[in-house]
Length: 99
Image 1 (tube, one colour):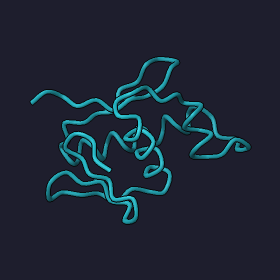
Image 2 (cartoon, rainbow, N blue to C red; image 1 turned 90 degrees about the vertical axis):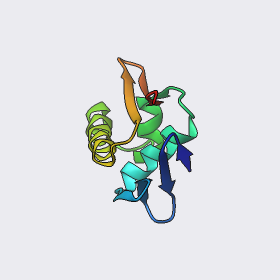
Image 3 (cartoon, helix red, strand yellow; image 1 turned 180 degrees about the vertical axis):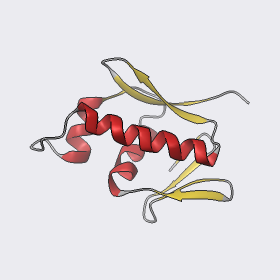
């Protein structure tokens, strides 16, 4: 999967920008896959909880927030133009900064 300057290897769990890459945990991979599939559209926290942790899980908003924080750190490490923006009480989306 691709978004902006990023490539997500679904089978390898690697998130890459050019020659640099990082390995994602299973939950990080699932969240990034959902955000990339939304193509910049908003994804609700509840959607992430249900799809990543499961409808019957006890996961809460702060679980999602923690993993979004992990992903933001990995995007910074890759020096990607892509960032994860949040809309308060709504959800998350991927955005690509202008060059």
